[in-house]
Image (cartoon, rainbow, N blue to C red):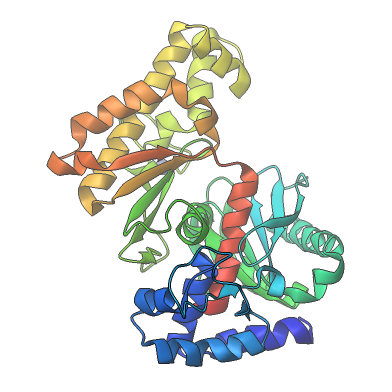
Length: 388
Ligand SMILES: [Zn+2]
């Protein structure tokens, strides 16, 4: 990390708890009046001003905004805003067959994006590919390359964020891969490794539809079925690294074997690969995801039955989650959302059937996340690490 980035990063990392809260509030709600910063953080206006001054001096916060232009009422409103490109973060989503990488400013606006395929899932090969991707994204940053502050990498499965170890990732075939330390030493940068659905949840919490809700659950459908929980202002990390694994709730028949090796998991019937396998078996030939979706849209009985079963199990899993933790909103994302019409009716019916009492009032929002959005979630994790 070079001087410009490192002095800003060290200022953020050495900030008091109050200053950290002030910066995080401005970061996610720019432009915002100092009075509102005080209200959101519970600090006095004097304390807010004290926290803002060094951030302005370091070029992280702009306090020269015209309050009228930004429509903020009242005087002296003294609006402040984050300087988006004061620091840059890179986010990388690791998929079994490809990496999706983005370089973002502090508001997770994408500046550069690349999607190289992977020739191997071996940890060493994936680490080499991540290093190459970071270098290649840095090359695209032109004058901003010296502002790279941190890198977030997201992987599905059991990820220990505190040590950067991927303990178990069924999709990657990994056990105890020390991804964080290896990448940090190769790249000479701060590296955060996070579970992919939690990274997406952090992105939605800081920069997406989760902002302004007290609690929400992010549920992803597609290659895997996962969830991230944002409760009482925090993303739930799980004391041992696992939380929100609704894909492995045992809600289906024990004769269905999941890719994780356990029996009866939601993913055993509802993951994309499981749906494709069921329909392929019914037709006696190997089918692709696209084939199966086309068959379902054409009313093929086997494909329709497979999607109906998946949707029912997912809806039941969401009801279980909502009954347990009571979020205000459930955000449904993941690549399978592009065919949400094949899930919607049965999913909502199963949810309504199993949601207990007023838990059924929980709203559902469908968000068609692209893999680039997942990578932005990884970048949001990297940005959050600067102030957490
Ligand atoms: Zn499982």
